[in-house]
Length: 187
Image (cartoon, rainbow, N blue to C red; front, side):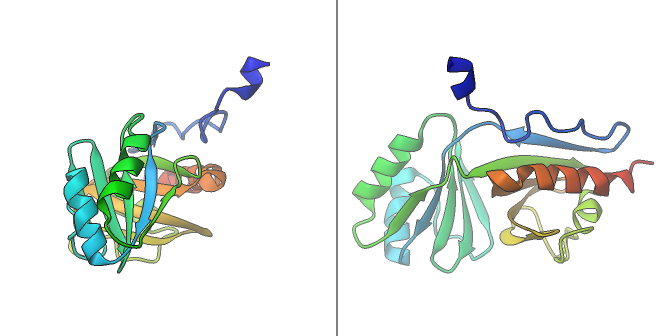
């Protein structure tokens, strides 16, 4: 019975990643993910308390230690943590905000994946309408967008590496979509 209750990774049991490609798609292990919404004063208080800058421009990510914030709306930030620090993040936000805000734990809803390799933006552009060239979508940029038929949050971490956040139920689709897309760039 205990085996039936064990949590499976969203990509467990899926078809193997295509062999011979220049790309990898690796799941990011379970970690705390929160959506914070509130006025900039509350965001500044929370950022100071968490040690992460919430003052970044729209569609930018900031990393401090084990935490990252992605500003994906005028009053919306995605907070990514590490390991089991979820309760500490929630308690810190509650104590520091100082005014009306919203903090939603989406750790079990979201799945993070790192997509990397040469010509990674070309592979992503098979289903993403954004200009993902390094000049138009530089390192540190993060935004909500589409990949095929799925809403994702896309964060460029390096010239050849993107972090993708999507809903857990969409992870098999994202895996299969990108697996097909990389075949065009395998040679």
